[in-house]
Amino acid sequence: RDLHSFPTRRSSDLAVALGLYLLVNHTRMGMLVRAGASNRSMAEFMGVRVGRVFSFVFALGAALAALAGALMGPIGAVQIGMGEAILIPALVVIVIGGIGSVRGAFVAALLVGLVDTAGRAFLPPMLRAVLPPSLAADLGPALAGIAMYVLMAAVLTLKPAGLFPARA
Image: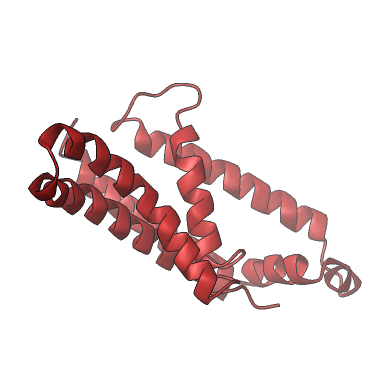
């Protein structure tokens, strides 16, 4: 791995996230997207060409997926299906944050990343203190992988619509 690419990748990730937030929450296009998603027929009655707006959103999503693939290239192998490992954690992030909430997805991504990283860093050494090393080496990463699902279950128990449900 090229360690010099990590700071640039992080700053570009933050720039894309900030740009997406500003687009959705502070531009006319974002207002049209939110209006079309909230009440399509009313937006169409108001003169919004919702089909064109959603085509733009689809194209933007495809461009962001291409950017994500390009940013992952230096870290892992570029191949068909390289994004499959992130699909389930992405779904967990969306559910925890609240479906349709960009702010919720951002906060949930930070929480899931923190829980996953802390579990992988601290759980195996803690298990080695009470279990045989071979069992702790197998059980630690498995329990760390389960931690994000436990977080999702806890959040959904307390707030069934997610942390920041999208406003209608």
